[in-house]
Structure formats: C-alpha cells, structure tokens
Length: 336
Ligand code: ATP
Ligand code: MG
Image (cartoon, rainbow, N blue to C red; front, side):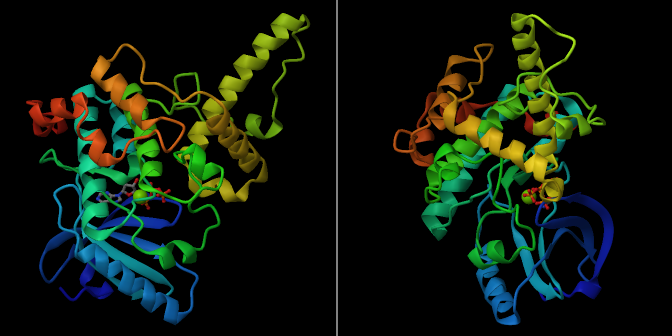
C-alpha cells in the first residue's frame, strides 16, 4: 500500500501524547479507516531515512497481540505512521470513562501483553520500552493489542521532546540508570495492571477524581497547614497534603506532555522516582483472587533478576485462567 498524506482524510482527533498526536483517518482510495500517528522529529534527512527503514520492522509484525501497521512516510517536518484503528481506544481512556476495569478483563490484558512481548522479543528481538495503559488498545471485537513499541532507536532519539522516555511506569532499575531489558517492561505491566484493576495509579493513596483545576497548589508546595499547631496534627496534615499532592502529581503524569514546561513539576517527578526506588512495591490488594495477586507481585519484584520473563509469567496460574476464560469481552465492550 503506497500511502500518501493527500489520500488520508482526517475524521477525528484520537489523542495527544508526548511524542506527537494521533488522528482517525480514512484512506480514501481504499476506504480503509486507520489511526495516523504524527511525530514531530528533529533530525537530519539521513537520520529520517534511517528512521523510516527502522519503522519497516512494524510492517513485519504479524501477531494478534500487536497493532498492525499500514505504512509510514515523511511529511516534513513530521513522520507519519499509519496503523490499525482500534475503535475502543486505549485502556487509560477506558478506565477514566468507566472506572476500575473488571478483573476478568485485566486478566486478559495481562495475557495479551505477555503474548505480545514474547512475540516482539522472540521473533524480532525488540523490547517494547513503553508499556502503559495508553499503549494497550481495545476494539469492539474484544481484541486487546499493544502499540508504540520501541522499534526505532533513532526515532526515540529524535523526538523533539526531552521528556520522552521518562515515565512514571519506569522500573526501579531503569530509574537508577540500568540498561533496558524485557524485565523493565514487566515492571511497567505490573503497575499498569494495578492501575486498571483499581481505577487509579498506584503510588498515590487517594482515589483520583476529575478535579484537577487547582494544580497551582502543587507549585506552591504547601505541605504544611499553618493552622495546625500540635506536632502530631502537623504530621498527619503533612501526610494528607502529601497524598493530595501525589494524587495531583499522578494526574499530572497522565498529561506528561505538559511536564517539560514546568521545573517544579519535574522536581516532583524526581520525588516520585525516589519513591519508586525506595519504597516497597505497590500491590494489587487482597480484594482480588490469590492468583491475580501472586502474578502482580511477581511482575513487581524490585530486583530485576528476581522478576520473571514474559515466558515464565505465562506459566502462572492466573494466565491459565486467561487461557480458560469464558468472559465475553466483545459483549463487555458494548456496555460503554
Ligand atoms: P505517550 O506519548 O506518552 O506515549 P500516549 O500513548 O497517550 O502517550 P500517543 O501514543 O500519541 O500518546 O497516543 C495518543 C492517544 O491516541 C492514545 O492515548 C490512544 O487513546 C489513541 N490511539 C493511539 N493509537 C491508536 C489506535 N491505533 N487506534 C485508536 N486510538 C489510538
Ligand atoms: Mg502511545
């Protein structure tokens, strides 16, 4: 398929991320609906051509767990990547719309992501590098697929945004500067699963709501309430405001695109990164089945040597549940 920008008719905006934006488009000559990702890159033309060559790998990805790719082309100063359109969008949008995701679906998400990671690694020797709810997509057939995997080292280097690659889903060892391995993707999967199953990003203790109107509090960094005088009261107030701050921070993380504008917010990212490295890993919580808890705990082993690979995790009991699942995801997608 010879894709040209002039053959693509924009139908809607699908979202905006750190590296660019995504549009729903129609390829008019073939009447195919696609998702077009537009990435503004800052690179010489030789590098751009290299990026396009690297993106070729995406064409060669054929797996039911990976978004298929129609092609990519240069539209100066952008690179456009045309991929399979997933009509239910990404799981971050879904849980924001409907709240915590049914654990039966979360189980299938875990299974699809592991199968996707295994395929990318075994067949193409690619590590995903950006596992998070916004890169796990759903369609109304009930299919769950991964997108935005790290095919192109050159592309990652050339995206005109310094915050690319900094993510709140980053593993403790990556924060400490270790090499990226497939184990880092497993950490990010564990964090994502907790976020979907509970409806909120872990590392913050308060249920998130939609009020993010007063982010300015974060900037003023009001940890202590001057009205509280006794030390004990002060301590608990500190805890409360800190939680509130973390909650706002986590909401802000969801809008990572805006972060680079704001030095104070990036100070708070560093604070969160410290927390990820220092504190015990978050857990799913015992309102869920033991199989699910056991699996998530295994994903969130802080030492990457103790953390399992996708293949070993596929042997966990919870993944047997996924393979034996009779949950009707297609019917579920029709409820929202
Ligand atoms: P980041 O840039 O930090 O990775 P992101 O994943 O949210 O964040 P993009 O990859 O630019 O940013 O995607 C923006 C949004 O577009 C996503 O949140 C998702 O909802 C939507 N989207 C991406 N690809 C598709 C697709 N193939 N089909 C449908 N919607 C998509
Ligand atoms: Mg994405």
